Amino acid sequence: MRVLLLLLLLLLLLTTCKKSPTEPIIPPVDSLNTKEYIWSEDTLFNPDGFGMFPTGISGSSPQNVWISCLNDVWQGEIYHFNGTTYTRKSPTPQFNFDLTDIKCFDENTVYAVGYKYWYDPEMRISGVIFKYNGVGWDIVVEDNKISTSLSFIYGCNKNDIWVTGWGGVLWHFNGANWAKTIFKPERKHGPVISFEDGTAFITSEYDENIEDYTTKYYFTKYQNGIWKDIDSAITPISERGEVQYNKFGELSMWGTSPDNLYNSGGSVFHFDGNNWKYIFPANYVQDIKGTDWNDVYAVGFHGDISRFNGKQWYEINEYSKTIVDFLGVMPFKEEVFIAAAYQGNTYIVRGKVK
Image (tube, helix red, strand yellow):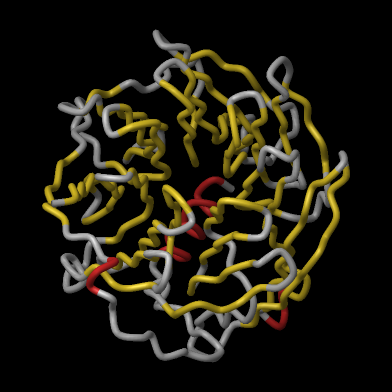
């Protein structure tokens, strides 16, 4: 089962660029609102010589950046950047585990999510949440639901955290306790975002008609203690095997308010509180984050980097002719970190504003 899971993940990541229903003309770039960078690259080295694949990146400052990875022998890894060097700071539990995402709030509060796995005799998995306390890692959640992986984590602050997973699983931390909810057990819940007003949003997927190779995606809002679907989209597969996004994606989500959300899949989409709008096509955008409403980054395959400057989106072309895949981004006002994968290795691409 685990082999199937990993094969499906790799196949998903290696698919060709997704199509978009319409492709608007991107206006000429306003040079007064762009940034210029000095770029550098660092390789994350595993002491045992294993290759690694990045699964998440988060930080509270350019001197406190965390990266989650999966190594060649299917174990979770975590690395920390202190402004000068990268240090391996992986959890060491008494079980096998994979990591899928990471969220940093400050130097003493970092969470990583994923799943542990074992055999009896077939492979079993269940969700797990780790917390870094400034010294080491504690296990704060071991889900008792079998065949469930935890996928994404987000918190508007460290006392209001959401974690999504398969089998309809949702975990919430209120500053004192973790509580689990099962919402639509047939779904795989994906990216999540929350805000100080108590609202939260997730996108989810469900293969409703496998014979026709279509997947239904859902956009769901949490308010006043209730999750409610507010939009959905059927995403068909073309004859060439390409996903045809027509409303919103399922790979990442970020925003500054409930009426200013960005979402990515084969393209970049924007939600204004009422409707989704297709923004532009891109190279299978893997992650999207910003520092403010007028400073948003989207990264994807083949060195694809795009930035929104408050007026328009434009491409940053330093790596556009490479075959390196950008899988995660963590921007700050004067510096941006990108988690990248190439030939089995993890790289951190860093751009400092000139």
